[in-house]
Length: 321
Ligand code: UDP
Image (cartoon, rainbow, N blue to C red; front, side):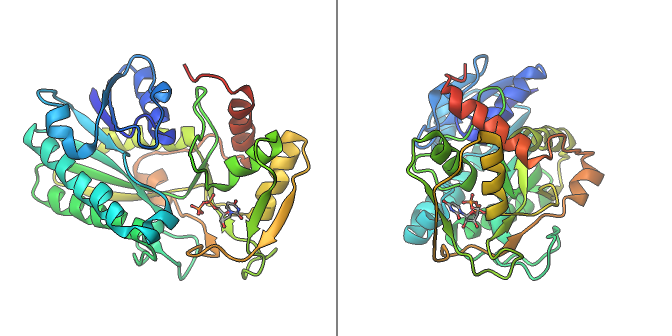
């Protein structure tokens, strides 16, 4: 297949692009490098630097058999401070990308949605029938795109799949998390272990959880990439399907930090602060539908393995190529 990967210079997108190439597909990456890194784009992919808004011009004349759309603004706190940026980049940008894809007859799109569309869940594990009540503009923007894709699929012109990720960790083929600023727990803890960051802060120890810290469901980036491949192969015109992606196991912030200490052999400098705005106490996925309908079987479910893979890449500081 000829596959377009938007956001293919980012953490998850570069792993998806790598796996597509490994399976013999032809890959074009569209990324504006606002948060991604050119050296994360796998060799063998055609790299087009540009925004999804400008896809009609940037990709003029190119034909694709499918698209994986990951390019987005994805910082919750920034979305609260600047909601219009999230509407412009995530909703308007996707609208314009979709118009380009529809005009050129692309039959299938896989979209990177998020657990943030569910907001504060009533029950866990969270399945796809849980109410969608995002509590920040980031989640709202992703939900708006899910709804846009459902409406487009209903016209019969395209098949769409929304993948709602829980917490992603690990590394694959030298590609790990490199956000600036970094806000995610695992890379922050690993940077603290490496000494490139002076300690870290736990945001809240007064949640209604066994140890008082937030519980999250961590999934290996390589397993996440496999779900994208399965979703792309299964997308059928006229359908929009939604899948939650996680391992169904929750780990508290304290448990993650203990695992980081075991993997790295470093005792972390940890201070405790108040809660971070917008953090639900517990987010754990039910991925039963993805297992059933996509035949998706995550192979790297050990939290320590995810942390070890991320640590290996961070410590080597190697160029991903
Ligand atoms: N967290 C923390 N300290 C940090 C970063 C994150 O205590 O420096 C907590 C955060 O409050 C949340 C969990 O770790 O409960 C996971 O946060 P992350 O940003 O990695 O992912 P999110 O669940 O927000 O998508």
